[in-house]
Each structure stands twice: as C-alpha cells, then as structure tokens.
Amino acid sequence: MKTLVFATNNKHKLDEVRKIASDLVNIVSLEEIGCHDDIPETSDTLEGNALQKALYIKEHYGFDCFADDTGLEVEALDNAPGVYSARYAGPGHDSEANMTKLLKEMDNIENRKARFRTAIALILNGKEHLFEGIVNGRITKEKRGTSGFGYDPIFVPDNYTQTFAEMGNDIKNTISHRAEAVKKLSAFLSTLSE
Ligand code: ITT
Image (cartoon, rainbow, N blue to C red; front, side, top):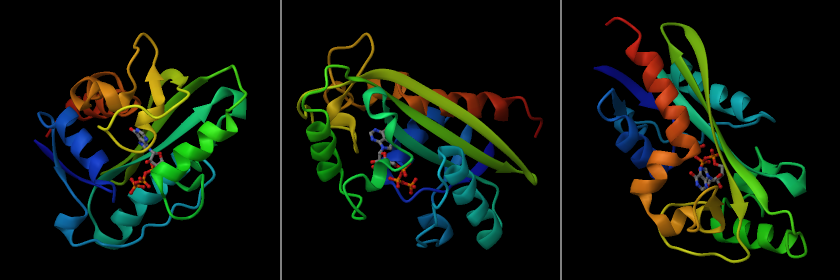
C-alpha cells in the first residue's frame, strides 16, 4: 500500500481522510514526521494553497505527500468566504466566530445556496497532481448539530434536511466535498503500479 504524508494541522481532516481512504493509502500525519511548523498559505486560490502546503513538506522534510485546501463558497456573497474561510472573522481561525459572522452577513438574504469545495494537491515522484471535490447545499439560518468541524453546523447538503454537524461523520464522509476529492486521489493512486 502507498504511504503518503497528509500535510494538514487539522485533526478533523486527518480523521476524515483516514476513514475515507484507509484501504488504499497509508496516511502519515505531520506529527508523526515531527513537523509542527506553521505552514504558509498565501495563495488566493484553493489549488494554490494546497500545492503550497504539499510542496513545503516535500522541500523541508523530503516526503511525497498531499494537502487539502477547502473553502465555503456562498453564491449570494460572490463565493465568499472561499479561500479565506479559515480567517473570515479574523486571524484567530475561530469557527464559532466565522459562522456567526456569516449568518449575520446573510441575515436578509433569501438565496442561501452555497458549496464546499476541496482542492487536493499531491506531490508524487517529483510530479504535481490536483483533485477537486464539490458538494452543493445551502446555509441555514442558525447553527445546528455538534459533530464535524468548521462550518458544518450551518451547511445542509442538497437532498438532505440535516446539517453536516447533525448527520454525523459516517454520512458526511460518504457525500462530502472532501470525500469526493479523496476518492479521486485514491482512484489515481490505484492506477499506479507499485
Ligand atoms: P490545514 O490548512 O492545516 O489543512 P485548516 O483548518 O486551516 O487546516 P483550510 O484552510 O482548508 O484548513 O480550512 C478553511 C476553513 O474551512 C476552516 O475554517 C475550516 O474549519 C473550514 N472547513 C474545511 N473543511 C471543512 C469541512 O469539511 N466542513 C466544515 N468546515 C470546513
């Protein structure tokens, strides 16, 4: 089985991706390679940030690896917060504050359509590869549910009535933006000969 470092400091992402891809990839965390760096994310696109994170690990630690950058794109807000989702309410990466700000911005907005978009960058054998996953849905009027992380309590995927935070990780991990991107990554890895 292929072994890859997952360049994330987000334990929820690590947990999700390990559950989705455990039969195809052996995933090593940053902690396990002794990396506690604040990896720069200075691009203005998800793809750019995902590549930046993966390349940082390759350059500084030498491992083949992949990274995920994810944004919540709200149609009525011209796709904001998008690539700035983590810092929407300020530099503190505070999910509660981010959700509160978004609900306030959308107070009088009828169009609640939104999507999560994940870009995964893979660095393997000196080459870069990108994979995308999208889930469409809508923003609720209030926070609901306690599982998941980030904006999960205010996002209801299409064809569901519960938020990601209400439905629990088992369902989220079969339909999410990240699940779609990871399945594409896994499919690509399974085409490679060992
Ligand atoms: P790494 O860069 O270390 O991977 P991060 O938490 O900074 O971790 P992102 O920049 O990709 O990751 O996240 C952007 C924001 O979107 C951040 O506020 C997350 O909490 C949120 N987010 C990412 N994936 C999410 C998901 O599956 N459900 C809800 N919110 C999510």
